[in-house]
Image (cartoon, rainbow, N blue to C red):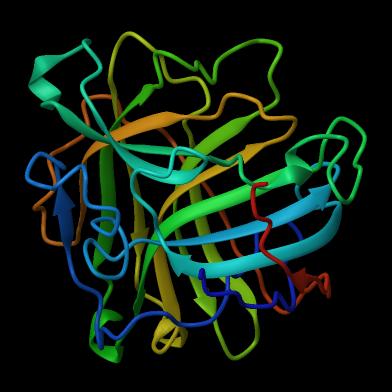
Length: 279
């Protein structure tokens, strides 16, 4: 059974998923090329393996309009091709990226993807999902150091997210969340919707932990998708590195990222946690 958690308050555009799922006392580096992982192990990406968790929320309309409900966090799955995440073997585009990659995609087990789901959204509800790692910022982390997330990305060659008729989106993010007040304090996103299905691109985003108020807050980094009506949303990610000591390679194709800072303004959206099951 996947763990459920109700969703309380949301910020105007981007929101805090859940409370802390981390046992770390300080922010730590992470690097993974996925080559050494067992692609057949259903738990290898989740809490018993790499430590990724999942959060989802469902909107009647675009994200930021009318929140219907939220669900999560729970351990990120591997090999369940109906939702969220899996290790994919091979893509035939670039042997330099190895043979195994992380595939991030929407929750297709959620029947509200379609217009005839339980909520009967016109053209389907918008399913907003995130697969991420979460850590707690220690006071020793707030020293002006800059944490950088670098990664390679490729659109799923079989289910291209770049279809002009699709409204699906994909992105990578670093964010901080104040768990005591329930709002996002930093959010850096880079859009990966337009990545190519036949050529890997390299990306980099960074966040400086320089504000003393960040001590005790949550830090998350990971990948997000939005989709409705079962649109293609899969993006492959590889060579992920999250580091503050120059351990990540410099991205050859740096992508500018927008930063939103949220103060006390909340949207007060309240949803009910509910997990949809496929028939």
